[in-house]
Length: 288
Image (tube, rainbow, N blue to C red):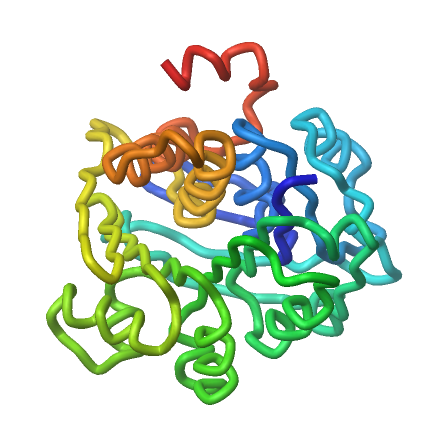
């Protein structure tokens, strides 16, 4: 496999102005891997309970995702309940039940541990570090995500992790919180001073910005008249981003970097979820 992702697998209950849905397959690892699978081979590392539907595992496998690292244990799968009402850009968490995810200890197969690309999705930085340390050889490219919770309660460990990755993918508010910088370019520069070669700042409906040591680039979001469910859009963006990097690494331009995967994330927001059907046959059109 080309990319390995470690993260959460969840069942989401979400309410938006477009309606309410229960027990939808979600979690950072699912959103990332499904999006990245449009471009390359992906392996997923995570844990689910014995309430995890076989049809959901089959859905991931239909996308060509390797699920040998998706471990099922006694108990219930991680559950998240939230809503997007007054501000579609901001999720309001109503309930979180970690269940089996609360005791998650990732186990890597030899194939996982030799993957050239690694994405450490938004989970406890202690777990992210364990996975990185478990790699047999240092991957060619390591990217990670994080959130305000870990900035608040696990900052020293998070800083240690950030110093060991090639790219941090983070939203604008969290970049400013992490660095104490209110100006976006200064915040991105401060992130890179912690160790990463580059950083991507997600800006919701305003797009994303890519910062390197000697360059920066901003890509707008694809304009939508109606948004159904933005849950997982950031994880889907990261999956599209890394999948596209792998697929076209040698011929990328900075403009290509940020634009295509953001369209993939906006597709999710517009349709509600990425689980709507198979994708391989239409992949060529998407590249064009």
